[in-house]
Length: 406
Ligand SMILES: Nc1nc2c(c(=O)[nH]1)N[C@H]1C(S)=C(S)[C@@H](COP(=O)(O)O)O[C@H]1N2
Ligand SMILES: [Mo]
Image (tube, rainbow, N blue to C red; front, side, top):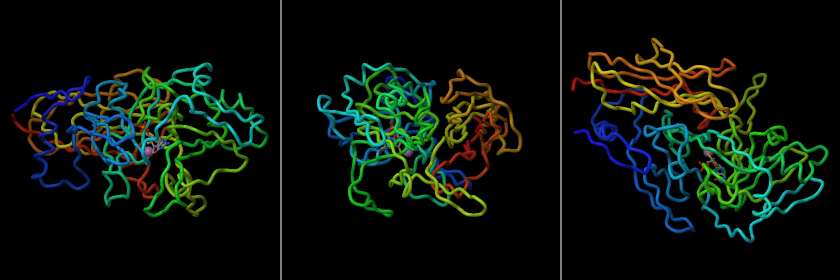
């Protein structure tokens, strides 16, 4: 039985993927491979806004709302707004545009209180950029890591429109000795799991001044040509192109310039990794996105017809760098073939790739892998770096499929 189901305005999921996953329950597990769902689920969010529904996304957490993009449904460079993954730590804050202000304060020449209207009148630009959650693919880690068990879809690519952060900083006047720019969101709450927060806190992250002044960092109010949806930061969010998602603070309400590095919860108690300096592990806030390729199709445990020609495709990204090559293996990494790029080379954005696989006549289990290398010569490793805990999961992710005579 092969049929297609409409999952949203712009996507069709091949039902085989779904059925394969269902069948997988009875299939003996292959070490190193985990299951993920290609199936779409209707989600009703308990946000302060009108009931939202997210057909075509995978529910990871209800409150706060966390939704995953079903990566096997990838069908172009841009992920539309209603299919873009959602990663929240607190309830979505409600905003009245008339009373909304963006504060620019701290080590500035003149403090500013920007209205939405004033912000929208400033010179704007559009940047296409890939946003990947630092915990994307955590669900594949063995042993399991603490946190949302994302599979392949805590990543997306969109066109963001707004005012460069550098324009706003200049407007206020950067004070002498400024080292960092703190971005604070309007959302808040208390973290009761360890490490606990010191009571209610806002979501906030800082950028070194150099990154804050880079042209790819936006204070965005539009996503793919539409005003930001509530769950993606309405009315205004940061888009820190090239950095993991946590830097792109949503519901932005305050920008604070400081003369000392910020040591807030979201960059000391979470979203940090260990780096080793002369044998001394030191905790550092997570920054730029690492090189990674993901296979969209086939999906895990998909049944692939023996002897067929199959188009393996996916996306690859490299943060502030460029993807130089993508290679694909259909024999668990013994041999590799160069994939072809299937979309343009856009800075800070993922690049689609594809390769045609002459599926063997021999039925059985086959392990597919993709490996991207960036223009700095950095490539993906076979295993996860344990110093990175549940973050920066960018090793080669195996996709095991079943070749069958049909
Ligand atoms: N204010 C605020 N900003 C936030 C978050 C948040 O919880 N609150 N989550 C961050 C994380 S961890 C990620 S991965 C991205 C996700 O952006 P998206 O939900 O638009 O995909 O937003 C970031 N910005
Ligand atoms: Mo994230």
